[in-house]
Length: 280
Image (cartoon, rainbow, N blue to C red; front, side, top):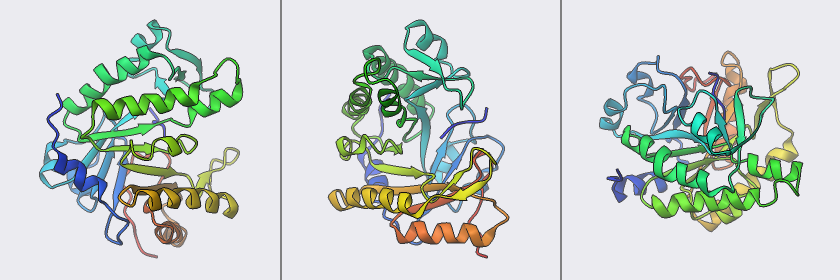
C-alpha cells in the first residue's frame, strides 16, 4: 500500500488489539495525510497513519484508539529520512517502475535488519504509535521469482526480518499487509493481516476500480480463514478501493468481506480521505 506523495508499551495494549474479532461494530481506517480533523476518526477502533504526515496522536489515544505507524520493509521511498542511509549502505536494488521514487530493498541484508530494529521502529514508537503497519512484503517473493539466482533467499530474508522484529518488540501490535507467500511462517509473529485489494482492485489500463475474479477472491479468503482457524485471535482486515459515490457497490464489498470474516474498509487508492461507510 503505497503513498502518493523506548519500549514502554504494555501487554494490555497488545491484548486489546490481538483479541479483536470481526464483529459487526468493529472498524478501522487507513489515512495518509494530516488534514482531517480528529473528530473524523471517532467511528474507528483501529487507525493506520503515515509516520511523516498524520493528525495529532495523543487526542486519539485518549479516546482509546489503537494507532499503527506505516513501515515499508520491501521498498524505500526517496522522500523517507532513511533513504540516503539505505542507499549509502548498498541496501537498495532498482526503482519500482510502477511507483517512481520507490526502490526495492534487500531484505536479506543484516544491515537492513539492524536499521529497522535499532532506528526505524524506535522512531515510530517514540512518536507515540502503539505499533506497526508493515507494507510491501510481497516484494521479496516477487524479486526471487523474477531472478531466482540473483535474488535467492529473499523470501527467507523477509521472514527472518519480521521474526527479528517480533523478538525485539514482543509487546507491540503488528499488522502485515499481504505478504501471502510468507504468512505460513509468520502466523505467530504478527497480530493481524490486512488483505489489500482482494475483492476489488484498480485496473492498470483504465485506473478505475473493478471487482477481482471470484476464483482469486475465494482462494485468498480460504487461505486467510485457515490462519484464523489455526490462531483464532489473529485479526483479519481488508481494504478495497471503490468509487465513493457508488454506495451500492461499496455496500456489497463491505457485506462480502464481513461474510468472509474480515473487518473491512473501502476507500480511494490515495488514502488521503476518511471515507465513512454509508448505507445505500
